[in-house]
Length: 396
Image (cartoon, rainbow, N blue to C red):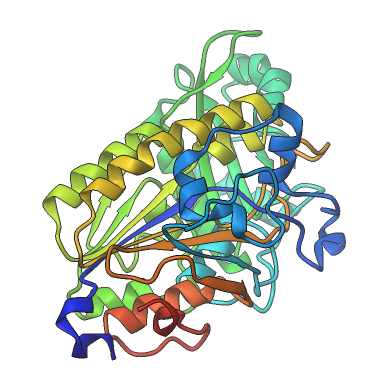
């Protein structure tokens, strides 16, 4: 066990999710209509070489299926690609699996809009009629229905290829606190349907200039089983969720939640937290890749965001102590180069770095994201997870 060697003891893990940075279609991608998806590599092919020197030094170019990077002689991290064992390709499913929970059935989606019984309850329990109720791009449906919403006061209801019930409202028509209240009511309504997330989508501006604001808020279904976060918290091990981690896990299994404005704020919060907490799990989601660029097919923006985050990885590495482990991975793909604006069923990268850990170890193709959760459980000596295989013995 790792605890038997104090020189190799890991006391703190910094786990960073590069939201939607997939690295190639999974074998069952055709079942999701995601053939040809490869978020990272297709971005490189579209914009030319990406400048990601820190990820490159860690060994991202050595991961099977990843092209377009220089292969350094001695990668500083160990590396792998991970397959998703759960059914689905949404945010909750990916994150839950990373924490050790594999879903046998995908969370439900509603490509033709939500059924009458859900919407009738929504009208009755909120006292509001609604617009929309269809699958749509968030920015496009605001363009389409924003004016009518302002005139009528009716919230805009829409979904996507993910298991989401989204409610958009202009901040001057439905104040944000009221929108959150409406979302809490909707969350209770859709709980029995296992819909993954209810999302508040406030926006401002006028027709032709509508803009979604940073006051988006997710109201998530709680994980349907125990996660490694639950096990850590039960043992009084600090678990800090940065970004939308708290929302994704239904505000369960965390000892502290820190919300962020964007990727750069997320990095700032990681650094702040590392300076304050010297043990436990610091778990961060950097959402801009997915929310601002993947879903909008904004290839150039996605590429720039990758470069911006890469530049700051060195700041995190400088703060690592001998008893730290840094894990960088993703939760699904969202290839901005394909016609689809939805998530894509892809492998995700895994980079594992620590000053006292082995470097340059090829951890192969992991059968499940849950290997991360199992490794975390192994490190902190909590009860073994039901799913996944720890890779700790390969790198310690």
